[in-house]
Amino acid sequence: MSTKVMKKILVTGSTGQIGSELTLELRKKYGGKNVVAVGHKRQPSETLQKSGPFERVDLGSEESIEKVVRQYDIDTIYHLAAVLSATGEENPQAAWALNIGSLYNVLEVARKLKLLRVFWPSSIAVFGPSTPRINTPQETVLIPRTIYGVSKVAGELLCHYYFIKYGVDVRSVRYPGIISSEVLPGGGTTDYAVAIFYEAIQNKRYTCFVREDTVLPMMYMPDCLKATIDLMEADPSRIKRHDGYNLAGISFSAGELAAEIKKHIPEFKCEYKPDFRQKIADSWPMSIDDGVAHKDWGWKPTYDLTAMTKDMIAKLSKRFAEGKL
Ligand code: NAD
Image (cartoon, rainbow, N blue to C red):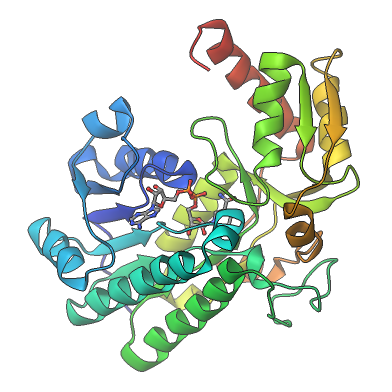
């Protein structure tokens, strides 16, 4: 059993919705200089830039990844860079090239340089219309309808393969839709569950791109960060699978979310104008059974709909009052 611990970490997709908060959380835990943020086109926030090293790396090139890994003596990679579900449908070829090309390169570097650990997020997008939609089990049908979902299924299989063939300790969860207040989401189907808060606070109205009765599994960012770090810090003996652990947080309909926001902002009005993303939402589960993650590495979420809504509104209202929203 490995007793080594993570010391030097690289985070790709560090300017994204999840990466921006995960990098800062890891820097708090492991020290700023020990967590290297990797960016692409988006300008990093001042906090991200000042709290530790920031590098631009071409994830399409194995050599570029290897160079930065050697330069900083990296032992662990959190590989978050990806093209998400809605954006992926606009350019499936680019989505496949980034999502699978960069994962392959990261796994190859991990194999060759014998890295300690890799984290790579999968998604509820691995499921499709023929998957049971309520309490979706860990082991089930994976026939998605989006290129994003296809890349996540292929990615899970590739991670599993690198573990059984080469012993690369790559760990993964199937994130549900992530709700957060720092960086806006980048082109997913669950983005409405974040946009609705910004619009409610700024304009007291929102036009939602899915139907009122659309139920999807979601998770608040503090739970997402906790799940990610708990999984990565779990003793290797507890990690029984290296494809993607089901992860559940909160399941609610768009209408229920609007009603919860209305409790804080009574004037808030929500309209529903479904677009192409409705079809994607309808092909995904409504709720997830994450019993295997509970059993293996002790996963348990903290936030329910009421607590998440209260916290989101408090954080965004404060930023709005300061003119920083
Ligand atoms: P995001 O869209 O906010 O950020 C993606 C990041 O990838 C950005 O930092 C961007 O700069 C980077 N990127 C894009 N193209 C790139 C390229 N060609 N080269 C290098 N970097 C590039 O995404 P996110 O929401 O933070 O998602 C992070 C990970 O979590 C992804 O793997 C995503 O599939 C997964 N995930 C997210 C959610 C969610 O709700 N946010 C749900 C399920 C899974």
